[in-house]
Each structure stands twice: as structure tokens, then as C-alpha cells.
Image 1: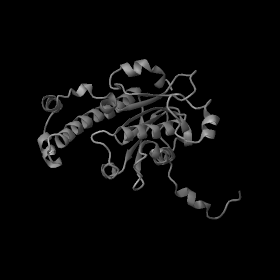
Image 2: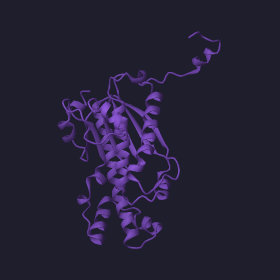
Image 3: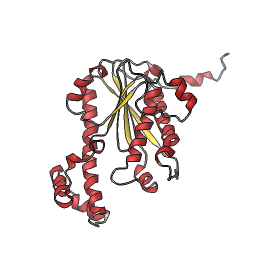
Image 4: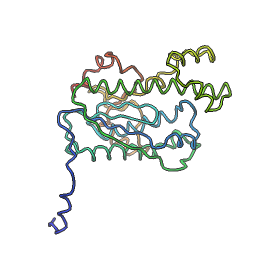
Length: 266
């Protein structure tokens, strides 16, 4: 195509290529999801439909971008790890972020009726995204330790908060005041003494979040359903779609990484 005299405007674009030889992590977060969950009547403190929907949308992203080796999600966020040596979009941060977050958001809306069949979307959900470079394997491990610790802290608080509201009749303000300044041990004690709940017995998906990884070569058919409802697409991609495992396990210790050494070799 012939050049035009207007093409000079391309010189204003900034080079936003991510550092080489680093793990690239794109994290997406729901925008205003406190209101979104109220308007769409999410079950508190955890709505299984919403958590499963988030994971299915993340699976769609993972199926599309083969350089993603690992995803981790909790609540209204998901993190996607790209291979250290990925050259996708020449490692441009803006391209990586926008492609991941736009596909996630569109998949979320597309799949919504499968999980919320009796609840129509009242308005379009929105997600923001950021990308961070982590130069070492330990940095990457610590990142996921941070996100899983955040999952535990938030879930423990929310479990106590909503139990006090739903079963003790406290107002949200009263529940917040009762939990103000409490430690994890205090919240565990409240759950056990007032509600006969051992926090460690709650479903792991609530306490530890969700990990998506590709299975080792040799298994090609996805363990979970494809993100599309098109039977033609399913048949065309059945042999090439990667098999993806969904785990709810501890990622803070070394056990997970020892069991999946191939992740850090990517």
C-alpha cells in the first residue's frame, strides 16, 4: 500500500515493549463489581455461578493464547502468565493487555446465560488490566503467593461479615464494626464459637482460588467444556484444543511448583 503524507503520525506512538527474558503477568479486575454483584443478586459471600463463569472466561483466554502457561483467579480477578520468551505482539504491553482483557470481557458476557439462565445482564460489565514483568522464578512464585494470601484474607473476612449479617441479624455497619481490628485468629474463633464453622473445612475454591494449567503433552481434548456454543467450532478445534486442568490447591508452598516443574521451564 502506498504511503500517505499523514503517515508521520505513527512517530507519536511510544515503544511499550516489555523487558526481555521476564515473565509477563496480565491481571484483570472487575470494575465496580461490588455494585455489579448486588444488581445481579450474587449469593454472599461466594457465588459458585460467578466463580465458575470467571474461570470459563479465563479458559477462553487460555485457549486463544497458547503462550499463557498458568492462570490464577479469585473473586473478580484473574492473572495470566505468559512464557518468559514469548514474542506475541512483539511483547508490546498495550497489545497484550487489551487483547487479554477484551477477550475475557466478551467471553464473560457470551457465556453468562449458561450460568445465570434466570438472571439477565442489567448492564455491561467492565474489567481493567495491567501488565507486570517479573525477572526471576522466585518473583513469579511470590506474586502468586501474594494473590492467594489475599484470597484467604478476603474470604475469611467476608465469611465472618456475611454470617453476622445473615444469621445474627447485624446490619452491614454493625458487622463491620464488630470485625474492626480483629486478627485472623479472632475471625476463626467467631466462626467456630458462634456458627460452629471450621474455616479450614470450607470449600478450597473459596479459600485458595482457582488455578488453570495446561496438561502435559499427550492429552489434547479439554477437560472442561469449550467456551463457545458452536458445535462446528467444537468439532474443528477438538483435536487442537489444549487439555486444561482446574485446580484449587495451595500455591504458596513449594509443593505445587515441584509437581509442575514444566511451568517454570516454559
